[in-house]
Image (cartoon, rainbow, N blue to C red; front, side):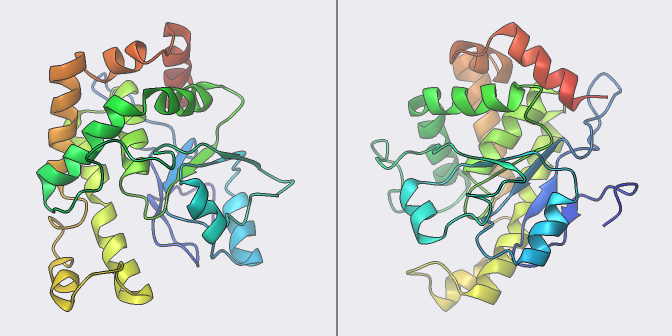
Length: 250
């Protein structure tokens, strides 16, 4: 893979959803810097060759957002690496907020789960964002299981702080949908899914629907005054917010 030609999707065997969030235009006419922050799905299936391919992008830090039980069942291949700084930062924790994960589907239901995390996991989100703001951390990859929900929240916060417009943040979130469909078609659907569920998953508006992120960003605006106000409320200092921009915007 050539560092001279950055690409959005990194095609690395053993994963479906490693994406660079660089190269997005900002509202002030600049753009987010390539090879600074990568978002991803689980890394537990990477071969030695695939691990080397990922490390050759210049990666310094991997932040695993999954639950403790997920890291036990499917350990991150970099957990004991001496070549990259692996950090487990459990965003949801192993106790769900009340109402999280209740049966349902559709954009409003998914966004409802995101709202619960934004409201109830503020210390965890603050710690993750503060880590990513540390100039010694990037290039960094953050990931969960499918690269949609926990990863999607953190990516949206970073992109918004960088000045990327809402429409682009929504589009970036929606790019996860086809990767999830490919995962479910290849590795098998989630427990409890029917043939009908898999058929519906072909629709970009069923998995990681754009409206979900639109609802989430509106919630942050209406409830907290926007993303920057939110991260300040949960504990990020001005210097940390500026450090994200200094690392991420060119």
